[in-house]
Amino acid sequence: MPSSSARVSTPLTTFEQLQYARSIIQLEAHALNQVAARLDTTLCQATDLLFDCEGSVVVTGMGKAGLIGQKIAATLASTGTPSHFLHPAEAVHGDLGQIHRRDVVLVLSQSGETEEVVRLLPSLEQFGTPTIAITRNTGSTLGRTATVTIALGPLSEACSLGLAPSTSTTAMLAVGDALALVTSRMRGFGREDFARFHPGGSLGRELSKVDDQMRALDECRVALHTAPLRDVLVLGKEVGRRSGAIMIVDDDGILCGIFTDSDLARLFAQRSEQALDGPIRNVMTPHPCVVRQGAMLADAVQVLAERKISELPVVRPDGTPCGMIDITDVVSMLPDEAA
Image (cartoon, rainbow, N blue to C red; front, side):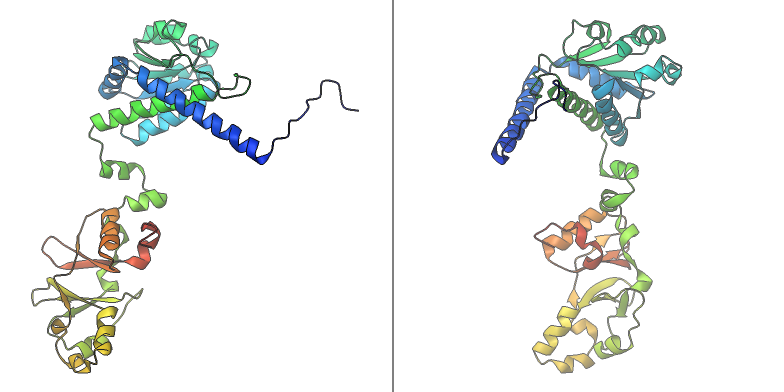
């Protein structure tokens, strides 16, 4: 038999579930607006500490705040500020050796009285390491001790019991993101810097250079501008993946035009078979759109989407072709409407 203390579940209709979920998100959104309005020059003092940090930003926090701290440390590290997370309980058992005078410690605690966190404070003061606190108010032990304290102010947890960290951790995460991204902007951290830290996955591919993703010249069809079109079509040797374009070069090897499958189809539609025996320069598209060697792949994809073209030659500074970006290789990166 179930015990008298067994909990009684409370079934919710689909409407009630959605209504409650929306109210949680709206409550947290309202709290973020309140936190944003409360920000003052202490945030600037904190970003100055992060910007001037000659070592690493050590982020610490216990429980849910610690999990948020791990994410903030990752954001800092990926946006140009060396950072790592330190568990406060492990810190007092030897891991304090990870903290040095040149570091900055970012401490997260909603109450500012978390036991494991408070135990760290005397050691940090002894080390002479500056600290930034994200906490509810400046009157807590953490708030009084920190070099700079960013006060979140009073927040109501979204939990129906008002207990589970929810609104407070959302606010900590938002303030941590603000610290990281403001500092990153102060550093002049750009797309190429971001790409160095994100070489993997779809994001890494988007941030890579055209040189890394293009079809190399020996995989492309290239023809001299004086060559008869028929010879180019019949004798042209295709290597590797098929591309629907031929890059046309002048006597100096500089790209001067492009001839695509669409151009060939148009010749047949216009019954211009005689053009097959003329030089390809007569039917090519002169001065084609190109992308420079070393450009970002994302920029090349944007050109493909905006110009509604399928092939984009990659050229060296002297104008000679070195490869081709083909839409079939980057289709996953195109905006939905372009794809």
